[in-house]
Length: 257
Image 1 (cartoon, rainbow, N blue to C red):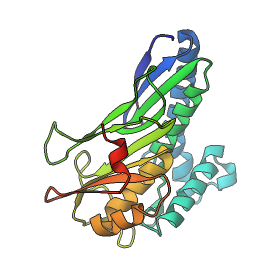
Image 2 (image 1 turned 90 degrees about the horizontal axis):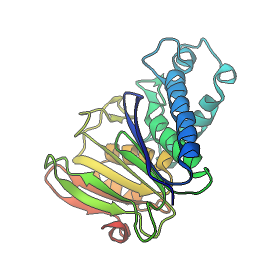
Image 3 (image 1 turned 90 degrees about the vertical axis):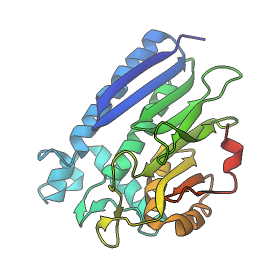
Image 4 (image 1 turned 180 degrees about the vertical axis):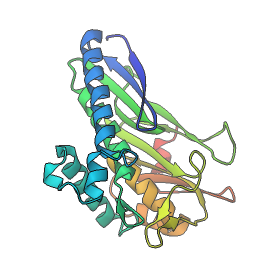
């Protein structure tokens, strides 16, 4: 097995961390360079902070989707599907203005992981995009990827440790108020979501969806959020309330370790 290749890159206002196992180091590093370049291009296309980004120009009506980078139509299609599945609790708009950034980070991290996994000989990939993680394969024979879930009520403490044992692909995404404050919006009101939750962690094969489902479930609150998450296939979740209660889906225990 080849050496572990690791890298951290500041992009999209956060840090993307890569851990790639197996494969020839030169080939892995070449693919990693390609992935990092793509992340910066995606940031330039989707950033709502850049006046000249495709998404900013699209939101102002200066550019049609067909004239945007091809990723824009793909992401808007995924966001529309997330809005449908979440019954409107995930939205690619912010106060009525187009803003698909809620799906872009997870989609970008997942896409990066899948590109790295295609390198000959690679047996395991972990891509962490600002705390949301896409895992593929395994770090080495007999070992599994493990991800710690921060406890927002105990700074420095863990609420759980998630193991990818038995899963060829697993993602872990958390939404909450610990890192960024009240940034999750209730799409019905356009104001910060007022719920009894401090965090929602979702497990699913694809980070694109796990990220969206965590956001949507947080906005719904613990009771409605847990009930809705329980209807989604291949999805497990841990919800932490402000009074310290942990609520979880039935299959979560199989991933703890």
